[in-house]
Image (cartoon, rainbow, N blue to C red):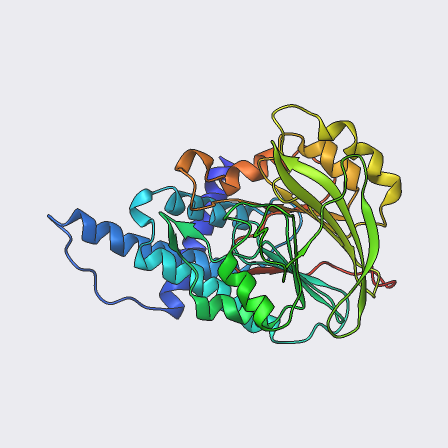
Length: 349
């Protein structure tokens, strides 16, 4: 009963917010025109979700309002009638435009993490802006994020790290934006293997790299790479420390039907600096174990609602909340075009 009351109250809040700030024209009769009705409903619901994501920022745990908001987004994105619809594309591009605008402002202290789309993130500190797996996104082989919009994300970044050779993690058009600006792109050798402008790095099996990496502006990162896999595909696990001492780790699509990599991943814990944020694919089958291995301050989930997948593998936000509920590490579930800013202690951590 409490959950029902909370849901009704939250829904009422959403509707009142929409009514107060964006009054709609008088309702149109939709009798005999189901498609027009569903399109209008999608417009209204995408707008409500967008407003509520702005109103309630990402935080650790399962905030009830965010859970309801993201669950409503799940329903919209699991309705294939909305695939590449004007309402869906406007929502996605609008969300990315908002986070691009925020990225124009320098980070004064601490760090912030922007989720762009799917598993695409940008980690920002006062000295560095690091992109992971930024793509325009494909739905039925059609790019969803406009080139002009994703260009704004590339313009705000210093380097990009690509975990593996899948189109929802590496986009040659976005890579070209970085390279044309003289910004390094680090990737597995299987991604764009014949383009020597990329920096292809892959540690030997059973080994890892741990080297300084100098950005174009002269700032130096500590770059650790471990040789993970998505089944037989190379999947680099990146652990990157900025000059301020903040460390960001990214799992890409770490996954195996067996447990070969999980035989050695738990052993890396003593090798790592303290990880501030671990970006983890939400459909990983060993979530508690791999999270414990990286031992982060926060684990941030990735790969919900990849629109290139069929709806059974468009991983739902509500399902992510259920999967991560048993994890003892604080977890953060982010929608598209959102920014997570953690609370800092007096020491800056």
